Length: 166
Image 1: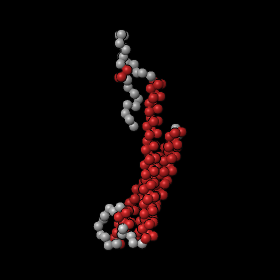
Image 2 (image 1 turned 60 degrees about the horizontal axis):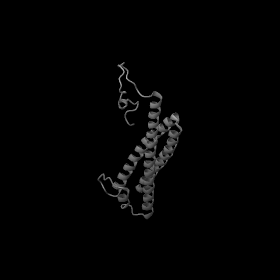
Image 3 (image 1 turned 120 degrees about the vertical axis):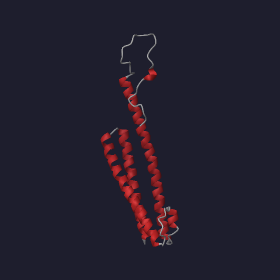
Image 4 (image 1 turned 180 degrees about the horizontal axis):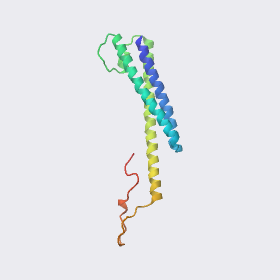
């Protein structure tokens, strides 16, 4: 019966992944809209969901260990869901386990793609801010008075406000 507890733990983990995807979509829109207050709120929610994910993952590992002990396996193996499914003999339970695994995998891939897109949006936003500041501030000139010469000051020594990538 403890395979049901593994499936339930994985189902809860999947639900949190779906919430993270929704928050990620809202976060992308907040970045596009330049809504920093909403972005801060969404990042707080995202951090809470990440902590919840870690707790659920620990619960899943505990449930898998209980299931292994129930089957007479005493070691703390780190089995994949496919390997775990070989220990399940009820076809309905095995099918349910594999379905939740597939759902978790697809949601994790979707979340990864979404995070990559969010990272690109943030990088573009930082490049735009750097560009805007450089236009507003202009080219830095030497702060010390020097006798004017025929050669113009080197533009390559210009300091940017954002010299490093974020």
